[in-house]
Length: 177
Image (cartoon, rainbow, N blue to C red; front, side):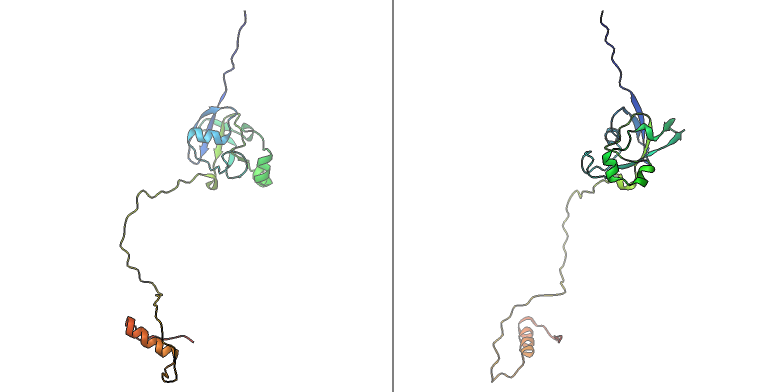
């Protein structure tokens, strides 16, 4: 007689702070996969490939009585090459990990810093029409002046001023040297 023993996959409790979103996920899932499954939004521009460094999270340590969870750094996989590439030694000592690289192996509390939280995009639903009266500071006027002659002794600016006054009713014009 042959007996098959099936191993049931272990589940771990994951709590995301500061949102408080929590749930159970299969062991071996990355923190990023767990966040997507539970609805805790973590920024990941590279789609979890470990090439952008945007999905930084902090593995919190200690006993969290509110959730009945003992969280420790060993609850996730050790820092890998991608973690060492994007995180400083100080951050690694403070339990920072890339969410796309850290695999969950036990109950854990994850803090998602502000810069790693996904921001909701604001999309304007409809455009509305407004009547806006344009009043530009500079306006273009096209004129052609008759070239100066010996019989017409007015200077260029005076001839320009006279033509603009006659055609466009512009008065009191000045010129900067």
